[in-house]
Length: 109
Image 1 (cartoon, rainbow, N blue to C red):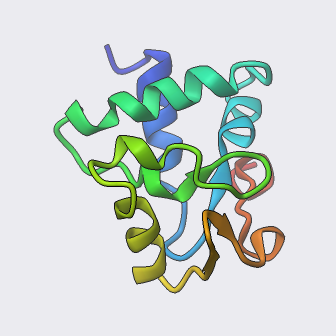
Image 2: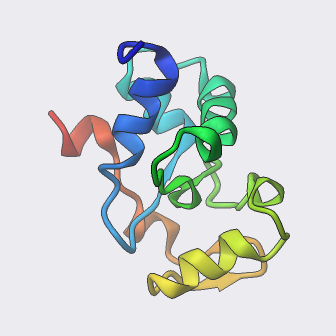
């Protein structure tokens, strides 16, 4: 079922460059379903059982906040993964979110 929406979300998420971040909404917009940001989140919540590495830690809410952090085992794992890539955080918010933002609609067109 390679063409499922979840698989499409995973394919886009795997393209997010190391040290960059995007939003659930940006992925939804790129996939032509701009109002389905929550479904993108659900897909990424299920990515841990996909059998392959999906860098879901690079996907944040539209404000650069780590809203999905509780899906990473511990509350600090998502932050640690981002910090390991050089992404600076202030609490649960990415510092310089706009500068690090990767927009698939621009980058993949």
